[in-house]
Length: 230
Figure 1 (tube, rainbow, N blue to C red):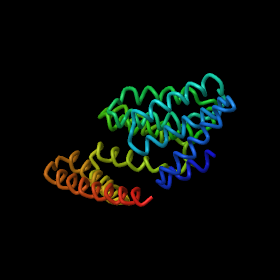
Figure 2: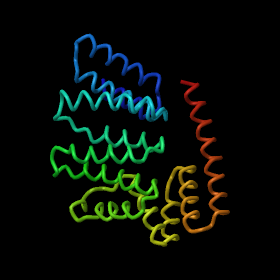
Figure 3: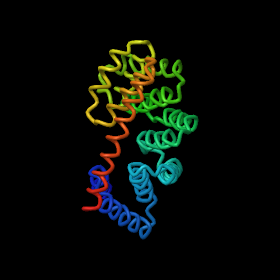
């Protein structure tokens, strides 16, 4: 089932996850079930995105969107649009990532679905910062703090937007404090490096960047050991 496949993807147990997806795909093809294929393509997209095979993930997300827009227009597609934009961002195609997010915002069926709108805007804000389009990012950042979103719990990514925002306005100590709150070692040092780079301390930024790289390699080595054991 979709829930089982998602569970194993999130757990990082990819061999079991892909077996569930293949079984779903076989059943969907046997029963000529278009909705089932839509779910399978979405899951394949999630699977390849987590494996950082963005090109394959994009292919399957696009296939899922094509089926949904044609045959299942009532589906909530925010998650696909968000993940698709992230894939394009990893490939440094920021313009395409932003186009995808704008399409996702235009496809929202009910403007009262604030959480979905917020997630898309949050991802758009981060993408604009990554593309160094700071003034546009600041405009979206301001929109995210509109009173209508006040009851929404900030997603994890909003922390990164906050760090970019405070760095952009010159509050580097605040940005560094927030960077140091990130729990993952390699991610924490990567953001500390960003802050020092924006502050104008290239030597210290490079030290943090090297430490982030070392910790990331350690993380991948541990992940490979876990995958091999499975």
